[in-house]
Length: 582
Image (cartoon, rainbow, N blue to C red; front, side):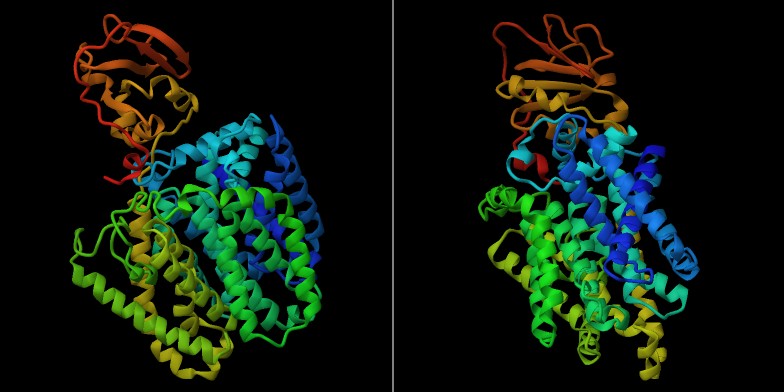
């Protein structure tokens, strides 16, 4: 617990201080909650740039600490902005509380989402290889490793374990996203601002992807929201409009998106920018060129890896189309009212009748249409542009991609859907003065808020939490055992309380694998099994005739010499099979 929250606090504080320092260098004089996204982007890019050898994570940690300290000293004269601090606490504390629900419900801290999605295994392996200066499969394929570098820096610099580092980073993003959303709701009473920011930063699909440990997708959703709001500030905030570097914050956010999501991240941000540019066609060219130059300098070191990444299997329409899904995800889930603890379940297949889903979808659709009309009337061009780009990318993924990529497109755009829905109801004080009738519609916004918040809380509370520790040694055994059947004898706690079965199956994917609990082993191995994996604490052969083949702490690999008799009952754990949900 301490390590997880320490990692979250370190990422959050560094992002806020470094981000606000960068905004101050751009000429921004007042505190802006866009600093959360700008700083997170800088942290990811800096850690990846520094972590290129054994122990370099420590250098990355030291560099981030120096940047944060320098920014704090530079910003010290702004310490009097108590209103910003109060608003931040009013959002950060509830966000941290709801993001902690998975750990509280499960009763332990560990790998998020293992029961939904075992992909965290490969991310842990990539971070482990990065920490020791070795290549990983993801690294070779050009996979964006900015978040992994942050976790490696936490590991090398502060001794925080990889599992706790990823959990802390994911938790920090869940807190930073609502803080970013605060930038959309200025000049409103604190309670109204905080409630709206929490709904926008943590809508149902973002909570659902958090629940399955998908840190990259939640970070990309944060970056898209922040990018749109930074364009909104640059064009509409009188304090920003005359700054020569007013578009640089958007450029920094786009750079961070590259180090987190590679070139696909730019599809959302670039699309939002182009639509917004068409709507805001009277713009000075020089500030845009300055921002573009900053962006090019920032992403140039990643260009070769972006080219390599375009061959990644996710982009193959004939590849793993479903991933861990059961089918196409309904686009109505992005509206925020989807009363299911598992976002993959179709309406009516869970405990809630299908009619409740459809009523929520109809209510959310009506509010979204109304919101879009009002945003257009009030010239919220950045919001309209961002939502248009997100909708276009979802349609493209639905038609020409896979259900897996289409679902991600929905999740990334979900905060903008909620923003467009709520902005006319919360908006700014100017809106409430111009449209007094909006006050009479507060009850409608409250009903939507309660329903959407309840659905997000349901997703958080249903999140599975996996093992508390990780070692790459089990994956390293795969070349030895892939051609034969293997029995894994696992501690009861790992299987009963830590979602360990699917995690172990994913670690040994590609072969035939049986998994049994220690207390249920009867002294007779299943027929056809050549290898047995046990915990290192078991220092004797688990069955007669088996000899120690390899010691790979914290595991031991035992082998039955000679020919193996009988047909193995162990199922083949193929890659696609291991990713399917229960």
